[in-house]
Image (tube, rainbow, N blue to C red; front, side, top):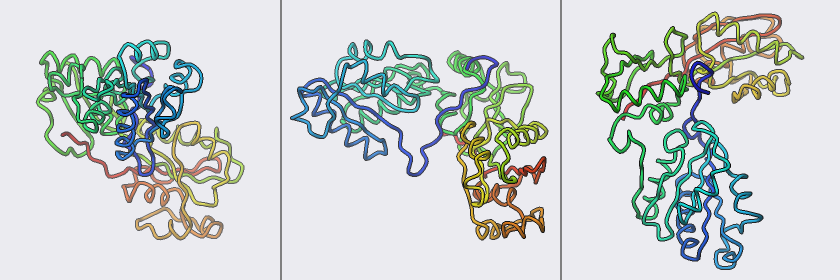
Length: 361
């Protein structure tokens, strides 16, 4: 979304065991050889690679999957946010193939074109937000070629706010603001910077603007009058009586976050006790909001150090004196309890903040 609408959240850092999909396709014998090298190298770097070729080359490249149907059908099935496409061939083929599927910066995957000899890797689409520049550099590194990058901040070696936000797992409050900051950086206009979190590394000179700067880049989890780049660093600890609906649980979540002035975009996930693994209302809420949901045993929760709000009833029922606070702290990696136990209509909630730093360089 753009402007004052809901901000865009970039793909988070790669989690352990989770791979980004990348589809590689070639059209000639030489291209097939290059594609095989590239697919192997990308897989070693953690991509989930699918290597495809035209049916007439299938016998020569048994490790590649022959394209079924038209090239447009092949592309449409793989043109998804968060992934990558590499065309080993001419830029014209790639452009004509992807054209009907292009939607916008927040929805397009990374698209890279590699010549069949592997001498150049061109970042064609979604260089920053989709990771096209990163994929092009990886392809060039694997093939011993040269990356071709055309985005202005990269060419001029300037701070790129969208890339930096992605690397730090920050939601971008609006693409309009990101574009405005980038334009200011390229024109030499200083931008102010502020963060609720400790900063690691050297803040770029482009972000040296003072309090009178026209634009500011603020990082935090709290609502302000100005737009805020929010890191996904909060974990909700949730508990509920049996049969509570997603709407009932969500009502407490929304109220508690609003009262604390916390941005919903800062929520990274939720946690509860393993007794609630089949609680449909809890599962449905987390599915609808895109929150990973973790479960812990009573023994694991009881072992969490800290000062928590005890409940004799909860202790008798599930074997530990508090679920929501302990679950939030444990799932946050031992972070700090930001919102203590809230209770409403048979639902309990607590919020913990991970120990997070904002990194430059």
